[in-house]
Amino acid sequence: MNVIGSRPDGWWRDRRGAQRALVEQLRAFAGEGGHEVTVVFDGSPYAVEGPTGGVRVLFASRTGRDAADDDIAALARRDATALTVVTSDADLAARVKAHGAEVAGAGSFRRLLDRE
Image 1 (cartoon, rainbow, N blue to C red):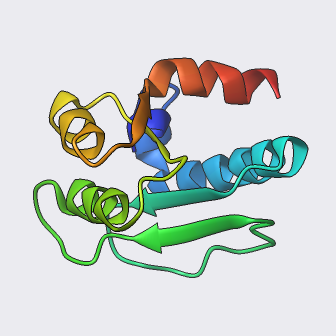
Image 2: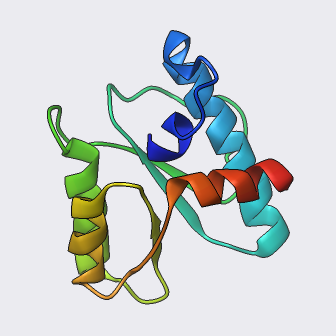
Image 3: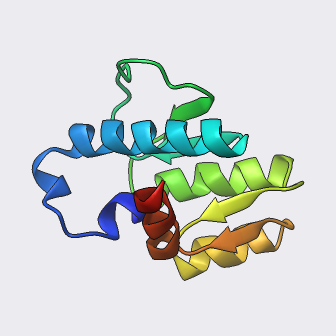
């Protein structure tokens, strides 16, 4: 949600639509660069419509504060090899760096996606 929230374009009026749009941008990013991409959303799981094309879409395993962050940190703990976590959350950044992951800022990653 850091990437979605990095641009105040009214995403909060259609959270699922914003999530679907991000998945589409991530699909293009993954396909063009040969990247493996996992996105972890907060909120209730739903079926993401259309092809995800190399993008693994996960939903936080629980509700509440830092739910997705905890799942992202767990992914980094299991395997931070060549892993870059995109976040603007300093606490999450510190947690994943402690496991060896790289961190990229959400705003700069959003600008990269917008150029794709």
